[in-house]
Length: 350
Image 1 (cartoon, rainbow, N blue to C red):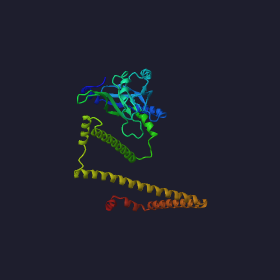
Image 2 (cartoon, rainbow, N blue to C red):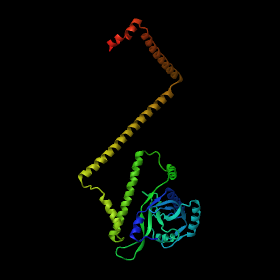
Image 3 (cartoon, one colour):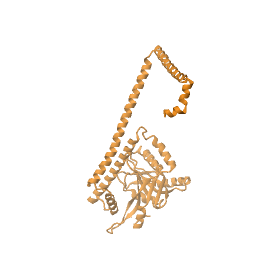
């Protein structure tokens, strides 16, 4: 059923699509196998999971045969008999999972998406479409979720079918987290320090922010040029975001930002100095160890034997000296020893 009323649109806008890592791995593998034959081909598959109303839980997926003409978006082929056969097998494995939507590797919306969505309504009453961006240079969350709606125009003209974007997020169960950690062990560089990891993560976040700002700029430019209609909901969200930005024209705000940045850079500078001192200390220590080892290797057996005897003689002399000192203390006359041990002497000494 296509959403038309304002209540239905608001209900769909409040829906969250939760995608599990198993789905992302399956989609990536599907695309990798298809890309070995045709590099620029997008792949399509069915999403399985549960639709709980406000939350759509996407837990599994399977690919389906799909062909399309890159020059003519209206020409495409999808094997719906294959969908029926695969669904019968998946239903025997896990009866809790239902067909809740479909995916493709876009990375953007295509003109034929509406027609494919209409075809899949034979199996799913309210299909959710998830676009998974499998490009390696992608930053941020690689999923975009949409529901098919009929857009009601303000001027009262005929409605047209379009897609409503809904928020999506990545969540994993405990078993999936363990599997993902094992996969990341082969990818993550263990030689990088914690500071370098944090800097790289912040750099990736800034790249994602730059990409989103570029999309906003492109959209506003198209609206100003008349290429796209004005969407008041998007404009309201942009206005709210801009209202949260600080006023950098104030001197107090600028100085506080500069102070905070200087404090952070000071910590980084001190950390670099400490690392350099520790590295130099390790270098000197290593050099001294190597020098002692080379010196030991250059000595003859006779010299080593003489040094060993001299060391043993020195240790023996020290022991004899300590022993003679103890004997001297114990050879004091009895009346002198009793004098030093008497309470009167202790009070006098105190």
